[in-house]
Structure formats: C-alpha cells, structure tokens
Length: 352
Image (cartoon, rainbow, N blue to C red):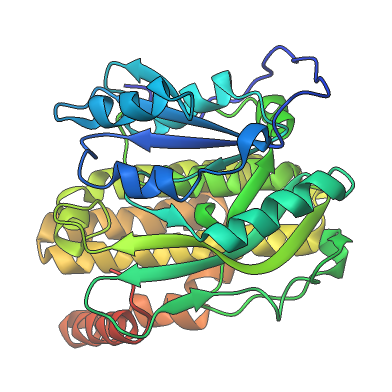
C-alpha cells in the first residue's frame, strides 16, 4: 500500500486533431447493478467522447456488463487487479486520449443535456485548465434534491482566473464531481493517488487544483451524485469503520497544503484550497465523534494537534472558523451538540 500522493512528471503525449474532446473514466468495483445506468448517460456523442471503464478486480458481473458495451465499440474496458478507487483513476489517467478528463463513479451518472452542453463548450472555448459544473445530490428517499452551484463565487460562461472569483459559502466547495481537468495538467502534476484507500476524491480535487491557472464555469446541473447504495463508502456507519482512511487522506491534504508554493499561489486559489481542507477536517472530526470510542477521540485530537504544530496559521483558519468551532465543541455536552448540528445539516442538505 502506498499511503502517499506521488507527484512527478509523466512523459508528454503529442496531441492530434483526432483526439476526443473528453475522456470519461469510470472506476467500477462490484457495480454490475448500476454500471449500465452510468454508461447509458454517457453515450451518443460519437468520437467526441472516449469512455474508459476500469474494472478494478470486481467479483460480480461488472466486467460482463462493461464487455457488452465494449463489444459494440462504445467503451474501452480495462481490467486490473483490485487497487481501489485511486488505483482505478490512476489507470484511467494513464490511458486517456481526450484533451480533457472527467471521473464518473459507476453508481453515479451525468445529465444527458448538460453533458452535451459541456462537450459543446469544451470544443469551442480556448484551452483551460479546468471546467466546473454543478452537482446534484440524488439521495434515495429525498424528494427535493440539493444542488451545489457556484453562481455566487465563479464568473459564468467565460474563461476566468482566480483573481476574478469570490469566496464560497460554507456548504460549497470544488468537489471532484464538479470538475473536468485538462488531461495534460493531470499528467504535468504527475498525480498518482494512493491505492487501496477510500476518500481519495479529496486529493483528486485539491492536488491538481493548486496548479490550475485558468478555468470556466458552465452553470448546468451535470453530475448526478447517487447516495443510498447499501455499503456505500459515504454512509456514516461505513465511514466510522474507515476512520483511519479518512484521517490518512486528511493528513495527505494537510501535507499538500504545506508543500504549496505560497509565493506563487494566488491568494484566492489558496483560499479555495483552505476552504476545502476545512470541510475535510470537519468531516474527520464528526466521524470520530460518531465512532463514540476513546480511541477515535484520541485520533481526532492528534489530527488537530499535528495541524497546530506544523502550521499554526492554517490551524487558526480552520479550527476557529464557524464550522470548525461547531465541530470541536469541548466536553461531552459539546460533542453531543456537534453531532446534532451535523445531523440537522445532513437532513437539510441531503448528504450522508
């Protein structure tokens, strides 16, 4: 197991006029019951889209489902021994031929009309490092869907730099599902996500983001983020069992922020990165509280102590924010209030 985010430089690949506009990487592990829905939402765009299904050592019929699409020339199926979500994304980046790249998890899907708009936009705008679009939480049993939009923070329908952005609200952040990166940027960064580790989408969202200089916000509800699958990694009970992996990702994000070249990072970009990191610290704290064990509380305290020792300024920006204070209230009563506040927010917004 590689517990770190490896950064380096991959060999450049010469671009041609026949390259697809976009590569969609679909990491799939034991997803036979939902993969077809994801793939069907991506079809109908001919050579503009390359679809790579990465079968990550599935033990069910995932490969057979993907093979039916591959036999029709609709997708490329790549099978590999199980390496986890990060390992599947790594494989997708290595094999992509599209000018841009998006990750769509096998239990999620894209809105077809919004997808067409995204492809049309990518085909005509000047090259950018990043395209941002909206994310819809498709939570089972919730009639009103929460949508993450960025209208208040990002200029719409034009190429922009970080200096033209505004501060995001507490429940907004540039999550992986909102992002389409330029493929060569991912390769220039040399991103290689940890294998056999959950919650690496935070690293995918933040590590390349630190190198983004130009972006475009397309205000369409593109990504449909499904929540409700039994055993899904973002279920609270599952996250409690995998608290060690959440804390590992938390530590890796902190390491990346400490590595960031502050002198050459636009202050507003760094603000977005800190905003994301703050959210992940709060999630780690809440999951530790949910575990209700002395060991989990000790892990939480070590997380905060490490941040305070290694970067006191970042610690203050995270811990003393409104949500940082609410997630770390002292004493048994404070912990109870923190959990109640989290669960109230979960009911309102619809996340797990």
